[in-house]
Length: 467
Image 1 (cartoon, rainbow, N blue to C red):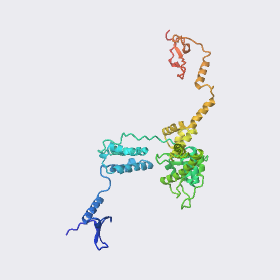
Image 2 (image 1 turned 120 degrees about the vertical axis):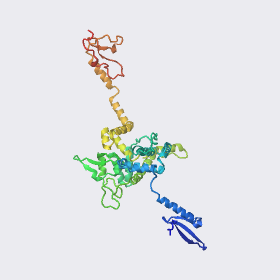
Image 3 (image 1 turned 135 degrees about the horizontal axis):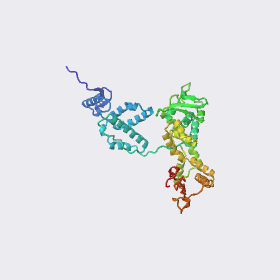
Image 4 (image 1 turned 180 degrees about the vertical axis):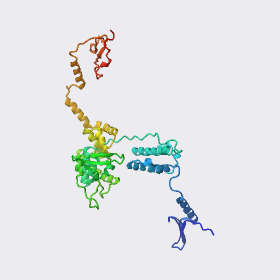
């Protein structure tokens, strides 16, 4: 006798108040309600739904073969991905999850340039994010085409796309806004945020590296200077960071008590529980302090203007005044901008590009680009140049004039000889000649030519030629 085939459902008999009997059908494997007889569900239909659900559960899990999801999984398990820095891995995983959400089961042949363009266009309002996702997509597809040599990828459909216009950030924190943030941290009794802005500014490091700094990384040299030794999570560069004296004073402040812990934390910037601060919770706490600082700055800006214009009598003037007040707030300033702020302050203090690069862990080229982008536009730099100009005085000769004066004095006692090549009509551009008639040097009154000597001694004719 053959074994009966399971229906895959459980049928529950129920008696209604009027005495009628009805049935409810449940999926046997999951216990999920499939339907009720009084709502039109039949036994045969419930069995079909249950068997379809069981068939889907028995199907092999994971993306289909040859799909983008399979390629993404292969890349995440590759040596190329494992060799990346932990922070870079997190960023790439985030981008790949976005791509898998769109193309998890799509065959690689189905990813056309039109589909890539449509995906990139979704991020027109977030250009940095869209460009980052597109670069990661191009990287994954290149891995499949070059490393795995997949026949479906004869060319990379994400190559050659024009990125969204996303100018590099050049914002720096003015001193008064840093002071406003510190004051807000004290007003809200959040000393950890006061220490956080000091660490971000004076170490010139990324926020993720600052949150990972621990007390064992501190050391003192023979001269009493405090240093922080760290390895950057993104680049893996090992740095010895000398602490600014203001940072040393901030680190010497006693830490607030921790929640549920009698002893302190080994971290320089721990969370209220003493553990490492997750970036999300750190950002929330930072935003609360920034909101308090904005409130103070807004009140000061409104008081300085004598209040805002009446919204009924002059709405345009009121809106313009509100825009001016918003310009005084911390709007647009981010935590990562403090790193650039520290570099710019060092440049204004006279530090060299190599010194700034050694502290920040940047390359010389990138450090120079940051300095070239922002420092020339600083008003105090221009003011310093004008002040030095004023110190020279209006009658002071220029360096070029001084050189011409010295050249004229050296030629006072020299005899003037005329040769056949000299211009008789313009004696001021005459030529000094040798005895054999060859020009020794030719001088010119042209102000565009820095050097007065056009023919050096190497071009003199040998003596005795032409006799």
